[in-house]
Image 1 (tube, one colour):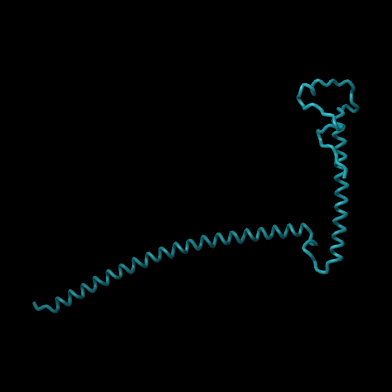
Image 2: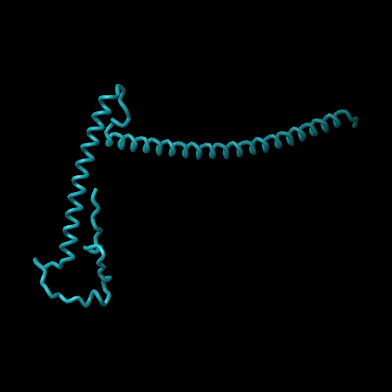
Length: 159
């Protein structure tokens, strides 16, 4: 594959053009008018761009042909359908669907975690209430026993 000169590089090897804005680049005098009203550098750049585009188009055509040939070989050699035989658009759609499903599952998981935290808080609150009720029950039981004992004592004692 042939290498093309980069845009902005000197057109001829070994020649160096002064940087833009330097006094040397500003002192060039247009002694010969370029054809079509373009400076020679612009024509060279345009030609380089056209060559690059042509090269890329031909490389693309060659790669597509190779890919089609490889796909044909793969189809003829493989008795079982392979993942690589699935069109790329189907894989992308499937991947997007899987991503959406995964995100949905993450959302459900977050909701469930929030619900678990709410239930744990409610359980802790209920446990505190139960302890309060048990203490109250114990206090009332003791008061009742004391009252029964006092009544029994009063009843047993002669007047």
